[in-house]
Image (cartoon, rainbow, N blue to C red):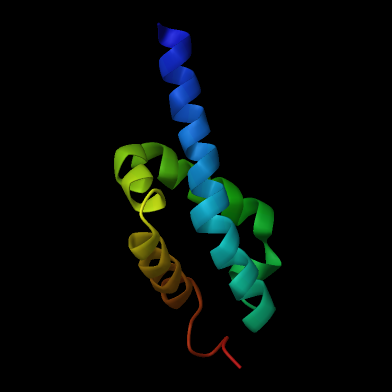
Length: 87
């Protein structure tokens, strides 16, 4: 039973990273290549992975709904990139 819960949890984290963080990262990398998020992708990956792991139920709710996913992506980009880093 524990294996099933672990599989659901880890697959949910994978889906959240693929659907929420990766598109936001690509957009940041394309628009502001000098931003910290674009320059240090591995450290940002693990930071976001940890945050998603802690808030897993909320993140899954966001990842499964397209409207919330779009809003999350826009908010993440606005929060991660300062006005000085934007072109």
